[in-house]
Length: 83
Image (cartoon, rainbow, N blue to C red; front, top):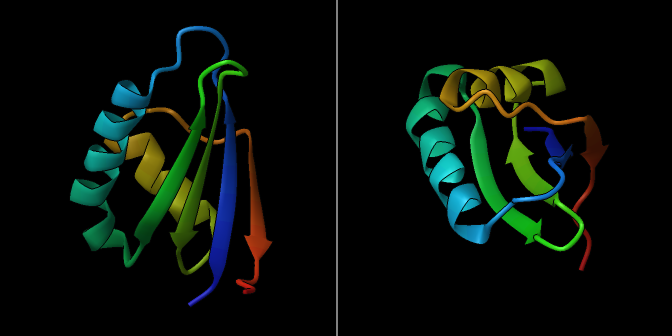
């Protein structure tokens, strides 16, 4: 399945705890869309969040975010995993 990295520019007030809650909502929603949110990274100082996701396409990954918590990514890029 294709792999995507998305980036959210959320600005001031982003916390690791809030992102963890949003990620849990993604995990609860993803199954009905054949999506797997795998990992996320948070930069509180810059107000940025990055999510790694397996999805049929970028639009479907976005649907999960929208339905789960409403925080859609500003950018979604197809990526390939390296070592």
